[in-house]
Image 1: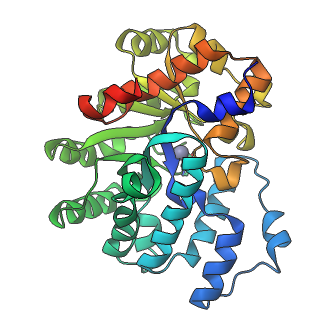
Image 2 (image 1 turned 30 degrees about the vertical axis):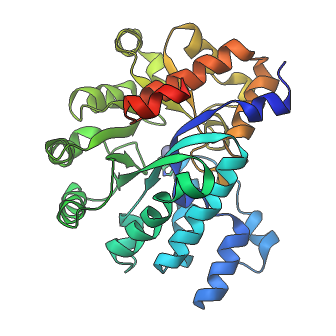
Length: 326
Ligand code: HPA
Ligand code: ZN
């Protein structure tokens, strides 16, 4: 098996990373103090004890509650800087970062505050951390599509520096079809499109993301394996799936890492990529996810190279940016 040093040295591309999911417990307490916010936790240990999840919703409850500490552009900038520093250590060379604007605007934070707080730091990622980056705004599928449409319209009007849009939050009962108009508007403005689908939701949601939202990549997508015609479709077109091993284990999508279908997905020829999703909540960053795959499945240099290459090809990069990563 590969050594830790070899895993770290592998040039990595991260395509499924929620910036709010990089909010570490220590930073939560520091920002709460800075902003004079009272949290319902006695101390760091009390907060840490709550990182035990039974499904996606049980995680989302804590994830959204903790965001209360993110108030100013400086808070979003500190969060983003902390992620970039950690990603650099992990060997990340390019990251496409999700931001959930509605998780902040619904609590009274201005759209420009959260977007510029993150975007201004991402703009410096190459100079300060030696990695390129892009911002993808994700819409909350468990909130009305009209709200997403209003936020997207505002982002377009303010000429926000975004590469694309995505769709996340509670999946079951919130199918992609509800967001057709939002994605059509994004495409009309030249924005890239991705969507979470087939994490807890059925293969039908993956089909909808592909055919109705016309996404370039599917976030998670692991339930695609239940539909052979869908697998063939994804393989033939080499549509990337941004798989998140630690997330799937912690949200009980799979029982243990050893039960994860990632090796089976690779064997079937799917364009699998490895991602950390919400690393502050799921037990590790991108290097940790790769390391665990190496340890659990004995993945070698060839498989890791395939996973990395899949991510480079699926990234929203110019050919000039892509070339040195291949
Ligand atoms: N799924 C859905 N919504 C999310 C996730 C996820 O894995 N992470 C943050 N929001
Ligand atoms: Zn996600």
